[in-house]
Length: 135
Length: 64
Image (cartoon, rainbow over the protein chains, first blue to last red):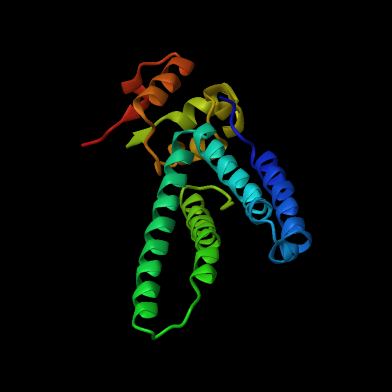
């Protein structure tokens, strides 16, 4: 399998995320007004497609990278999963005790961005540690 | 683990990027191996040895 160059990967992600932003701004606001239940489900799920596309790209990038890069990706992913899991447990208990009053949909929306953020920062730090440019 | 990868690469006049291309790994991986920050897997170590036409133990020294 040929490796993904950073440039190629970034271009793909940027294009997909541009589609996502367009959907969120122009398609998503109309979903609540739709009355047909099937159409409502379809329209509600459309913005999730680009996000799934990015996850598939991330997976392909890890699979096509060399052994050191795979190790760095997996350590970063492990750090992100651990931290986000710990935070979700903390927030769950705080919400269950009515210390925080957060809507479930708001919390669920932030899980993936939080994973990406911690994953990205961890990967950057690890790459620097192993002599790379950090991105 | 100490190794002679940098010495052998420079002897062949290759950059880290060129060696990475020949081994199908990134420049960063070559740099990490040369600086001793990363020990390559056995298949990659054999690939390196084969590329330089040397025995694996003459390139990599696990030390004491």
